[in-house]
Length: 601
Ligand code: GTP
Ligand code: SPV
Ligand code: MN
Image 1: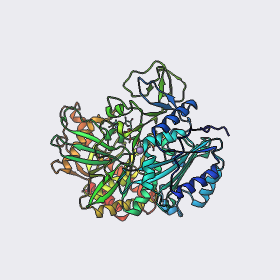
Image 2: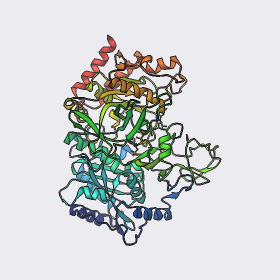
Image 3: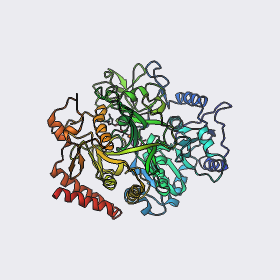
Image 4: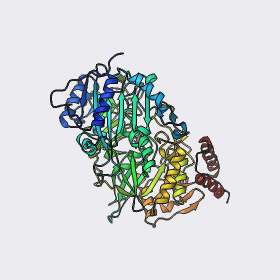
C-alpha cells in the first residue's frame, strides 16, 4: 500500500506533551500496538506545533499556501476526488441490538464490527506518525462540556481539529487525572482512502468512534457529527438534555431587547448563512450575532431551554459565499482559514462559483486540473468547505463562552422545498412543533455522497446524525417539552420555494431578517397571524416587507397553502411514519390526524 501520509519528526519541545491521565495513556498504547506507527505525536494545540505541522504539510503537498496578500495565513487542501462528502451508507451505529439504532440508521453488531475494524487498522500507520489530539467540546465552564481524544494519521485532521475545537491544554485540564473520568475515544486512519474500505462506526455504549478510509471533514473531524451529534444525542437522551443540528443566533432590537433562537436546517440548507445574517438597511438598529452555526447542545435551567455551541470554528460551505450573500462569512475566511476543494487562481487566491470576483480566465479546479470559463466542470467542488475559527466572525456573540448557555425563545425548523411549504408558519404548541420537526423534508444536497435534489424526510435535520432509535428521539423531544415551563415557540421556514418559472420566490439571506422579525414579534406577543390548518400563518401585512422589491403576487404565493399539495404532503407524512415501523409516538400520530382533519373543516 502506498504511504499517503509519511511520518514527520518534530524537534524537541514539539509533539511531546503526554497527558497525565493513565486511562488515556493505556488506550494510546493499545491503538499504537495495533496500528504500528513510526512515532507518536502528542498534540498540545500550541502555536509552535501548528507552525511545524503546517510546514510539514506544505512539504508533503497536504496543503498549498495561498497568496499572503489575498488571504493571509491560509491554505488550500485537495481531498481525494473519491472522498468529498459525508458517506451515509458507510456510517454505522453499533449498539448491542438493531432496535437501539432504529429504522433510520445503518446498524452493525459491536463485537463483529470491532473485529473488522481491528483487521483494517492492523499496521495501518506503518511509516506514519500517529497524532493524539486532546480536545474539548463546549465552553470551559459548561456542565455540558465533553472531552474527547482523536487519534489520527492525518495532519489535515489535526490542523482542522485545532480550528474546530478547543484543542490541547484546556481539554487536558478539564479531564484531569481521574482514570474513571468520562471521555470520548476516537480513532481515525486514512488507510489508503479507498471507498471500499471506508467506515464510520459509532459505539455509543463505549463512547467510542472509529473512522477509516476517508479524509473528508464530516467523516473524520470526529468532534463534529460523530461526537457532538451521534454520540452526543445518545448521551443527551440518557442524561436529559438535547444535542441538535442547529445554529444559534442572537437578535437584538434597537431598544436593546435581545432574544436567542435555534434553527435546524439540513446540511447545506442555510444554517451558517442564517447564523451570520446582516439585517437589511431598513432594519436600522437591529443586530444579529452568532453563537453557533451547526450544532446546539441544550439543557433545561429553571424551566427554560439554554443552548451552548460545542464547537470553536466553522466548517462551512464555500460555493455561494460572497460579500453579497454573507459578508460576515467573507470577512471570517479572509485569513487563518483552510480551504478544502476550492479552485486555485493563477495568482494564488481561491475562487469558487458564486464568489463576488469575476470568473478567472484560468484556474486550477478542485482536482488540480486546468480550468477556464469554457470548462464543463465546476471550478470548486459543490461541497467545497472552509475551516475558520469562530473568533474570525465579526458578528460573534459576546456570550459564546458562557457556560450556562443562552436562553432560547424560538426553535425554527426548515428545509429546502421547491413547493408546498410556505415561507414561515408557527406551530400551535410544543408537541405540534415536534410534529413539524419530525415530518420536515428537504431536497438532498452535495454535503452527502449520493443524488442531489431529491426530497427526503429529514426529521429535525437529524436523519444522518441521530445516534439512536428515531422513535425514542421523538419521544425525548416530547418528554423535554413536559419539563419546560417556558418552552420556546416552534416555527417552520422555507427559503427555497420556487415559482412556476423555477426561480426562488424569496430573496433569502439578509432579507430573512423579515421572517426573523415576525418570529420575534410572535415571541413578544405583538405579531399578527391567521389560524390555518397547518399552524399560525402570517398574512402579508403581518410581515414587515417595507423597502423590499417583491411583488404582491409573489408574497401571496410564498405565504400560501395549496390544499392539493398539502393532501399529498399529509399522505407523505403518513408514509414516512409507516416506514419507521411502529416506533412513532402515539402523540405524533394524533397530530397527523388532527392536521388532516383541520383540512377537512
Ligand atoms: P452545513 O454546513 O452543510 O450544515 O450547511 P448549512 O446549513 O450551514 O448551509 P449554508 O448556510 O452553508 O448554505 C448552503 C447553501 O445554501 C449555500 O450555497 C448558500 O448560498 C445557500 N443559501 C443559504 N441561505 C440561503 C437563502 O436564504 N436563500 C437561498 N436561495 N440560498 C441560501
Ligand atoms: C453537514 O453536512 O451537515 C456539515 C458538514 O455540517 S460535515 O461536517 O461534513 O458533516
Ligand atoms: Mn451541518
